Image 1 (tube, rainbow, N blue to C red):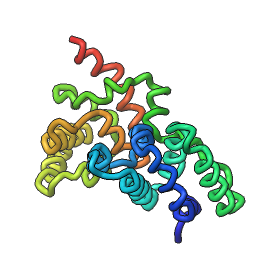
Image 2 (image 1 turned 90 degrees about the vertical axis):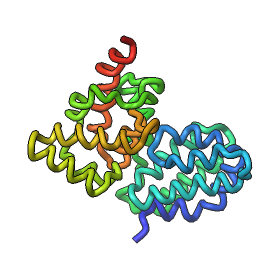
Image 3 (image 1 turned 180 degrees about the vertical axis):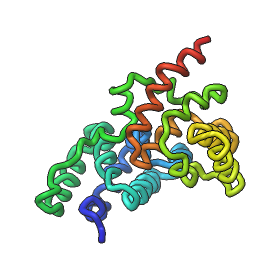
Amino acid sequence: MATPESQAFTQCYPTLVECIQNSPNDVAVQLKHYPILAPQDTQYLKNSTHDDGDKARRILDSVDSQLKINKVAFHQFLAALKKSGSFTTNTVKELEETFKRISPPTSVSVPDSNDLSIANLQSNTGVTDAQLDNELVTRNLQVLARCFGNFRAYLDILELTDGNQATVVAAAREEDNDGAMREALKLWIKRNPGAATYRALVNILLQLGKGDEARKVCFHVVREIAKIITN
């Protein structure tokens, strides 16, 4: 059964297309703070050959995909729209009112739209965009691994091959959970050269709803990685 968030989004879809096509790039800039746009979506939006209507629909398709996984994406999308500019004001109001009208009485209140977002983590931890955009420092992975829970929760979303996963499981047997996460992160870096940044890792954690782990990673970047980068 569709959630109130999904229903509101679907009902307002035509209005959203009309609104976002006014400035899809501004919306995309704000969405980078949330785990909504995939790397291929970002590349599509940067391509000047696509018209603004197509870009708007690409953004909305990405939001719709995330809504199927996590209804928090609806409130993250709302937050991004609000920060995109005055051209979204009427559309935001329509989307919020539609959601409230559809929602049952027990869920009328809208969650804090800053929850589970990079912007909120930056406010709470002091981590900067520049720090998050650094690639993972491989010699510091053993320390970073301590930020995570059970390693098995991350194997699929890190898109490790069966062989990679076997290596990680072996590390867990020979060492412990931290050793397994160290190997998982090392293999993830190898599979994503140039793209295995702290921001990408935090976005993965947010997509899984693991806010505590995401916060620990941000503190790790502030306390540990900053020292290594400046040395």
